[in-house]
Length: 251
Image (cartoon, rainbow, N blue to C red; front, side, top):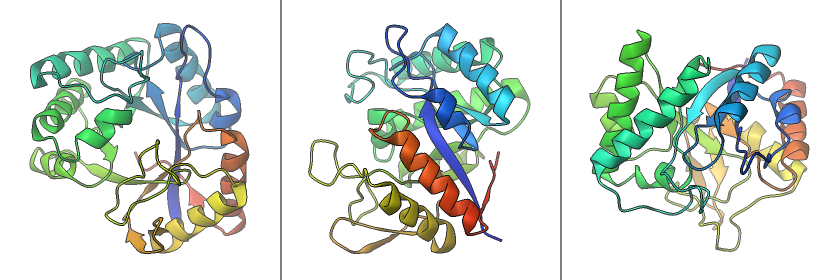
């Protein structure tokens, strides 16, 4: 039987207002990456996420970002590695302090993409996760795409779990189409569900030029704030269940 994790980025409140239907998404996924205050979220939203996770049996991951609430964490910041590390420690510490059992860490937005190539920022993420793991007394995997971050995690003895995106366009090199470019976002639930089945069964995704990208993904993501996120997640979960794919968190 094929096994796959289904995750969504949630708890992304802004000014106290939700950007996603968290209740509906929690009922469909196996892992939730929770905003830690860098790009969105606050203590109240983090506590609410912890409670939802307990009710639904969903694993909690931390979703830290550059400290960029104005740009929703999607603006690259030329900050020092030391400043980034302090921000990450604060974000991870805040989520842990509200009672979250953090099972993995997934950087958000611009930071997620930057650490594929930026050695200093990748090291800051790895060091912050290593410190979190030491405090918890157990391994805490990093979730992301291949790149410098995966190599650094391996050298530090931190498990690295590869992810694939169901609602984002892919470039032939395995990166994502920039959100400002055509083909960046997918909206059709049937198309997204078919992509999920292909990824779960053979681990490949079709890029915008028609080429196939091998992902090695153990976790599939539907962004909670994407238009039609709930409909896409429902279609994905129904397709995986019907095909006998076991949707289980790997953490």
